[in-house]
Amino acid sequence: MWNAVIVDFITCVFPDNNKGHKIMMASRFVEVTSYFNRDYYKLSFLTDEDSWFLLKLKVFRKKCCPPELAEIGRNIAKKCNGLPLAVVVIAGALLGRTTRREWQLVDENMGEYLINRDVPDSCFRLIKMSYDLLSYYQQACFLYCASFPQGFDIPGWKLIHLSIAEGFIPIQNHLTLEEQAEECLNELTKKNLLMVMEESLDGQIKTCREFCKKEAIEEDIFWAIKNAPDEESLVTKDSGTYRRLCIDSSTLSNFLKELRKEPPMQNVKSFLCFSSNPIDNQTPDMIKSLHKGFPLIKVLDVEPLRSLFSKDFYQL
Image (cartoon, rainbow, N blue to C red; front, side):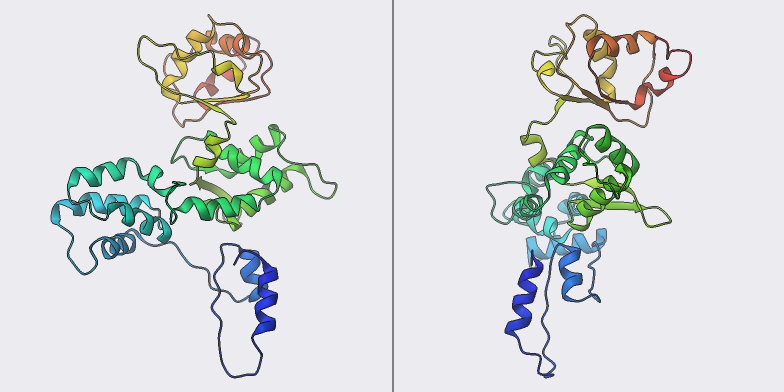
């Protein structure tokens, strides 16, 4: 069920006559289930072993899994992150595939199988329905998650601060911007658009993993700068037309070198690079490249260069 109004309709149709009949209802939204019954059961994620058992059951039915497919099959099941729907969708992609190479191709392209508009039973339809029910600023915060690298555990505090800096969070008199941003983040998890991977001791969201990137990328809200062949430039004419740029840390050094030789990118307001490891051979020229290349920058998050933003270089 997607709406509490349907709950009212159902309770009116079925009489309360103490006959002991029960209605089982399922919903992706916490507010809908709690409206129907506050003592609801919250399904937990499958373990890796349970995911593998379900995958084998859907692919092979009562037959045994061939030994040569067991290792890669377990790896595929693990990548489903305990989501039964993901396991079922991937099992459908594996049906009829009998070689290790075919299973390896599915393993390498799981995102395409899980979020595929052309497959009626894919995850895309359900996630899109949840996404369409979000408010405008909640949609903006959700799509912004796509700027993080795939598989990156997004710290809750970082997503809150970046959402505020980008202007996604509306001002309300009774809440601070931080409180409003945290409420938005909690709403995304309640609607199962973000997966909570870890919680702090007080129950607040500490890290989360965004598992639907397809819709965000198609909205063209950012440009991902990736490694290019040796003969091609990282700084293309398209780079400067986007409002937000994100880049992998392995590409950052070469990109900044090229950036100093190019005209300023007036349209770029946000530049993001997420990595837990600092890059080698950091120099003050990298900061100069950022200043020259992005004169109108509003949001800057470059973790691999954090040591350059010390007092020694800040005056540059």
